Length: 238
Image 1 (cartoon, rainbow, N blue to C red):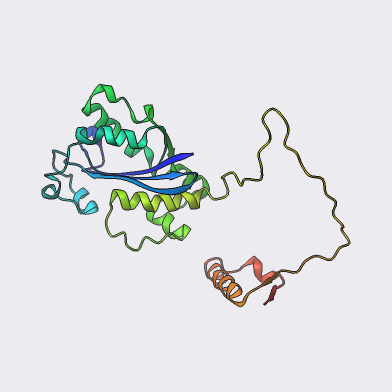
Image 2: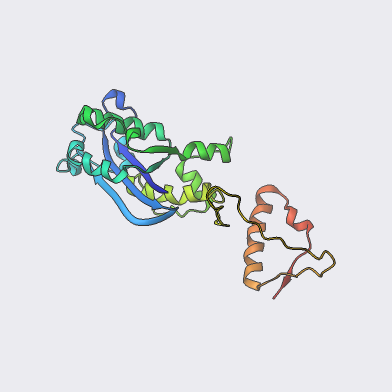
């Protein structure tokens, strides 16, 4: 599967009020692994920022003055995302802005979903963490993604962070590769017997692994006040 993790920055919160896209960042994944291919561009919005929007991105009209207009990069952008599944955080926002940009560039470009399908990582996060804050920064903290270098919003940086967050959100949902059934027939299953009386193997962990485990449990104890692991027998340490 080919996926493109996508983020945009804009001059304000609503394209209906005439706000425009000022930055697009995309990261390509194939079979849940980064390919190294990215698409990134700044855009001349041909309008002022709304109050507050400029502070979020750190971009200025002076910086964007010599950058291309959307219609100059639209073909390259569409070629990059064509046929992919787009992973976007709060997809309705970005899709609305990009559909507006496509409409302004010309009716021949259609809509974003004419070229690609869309997966909203915000909806995935709300399903997994109901009732909690599910902003990109909150998810980075919750899933252990290092975002210390994110001082301002930037489309490519945010797309790269979202890629790591998305893998964390969907871990365990991919095909684990235990074999495929042959076309038109059932998958063969090898028969085997289990001797219930045989001694069970005893797993030994290293001192480093045990220390890391204890550090994690201590965080759980501080957060929840107790830990179910404390009621279990400690494993042998090698």
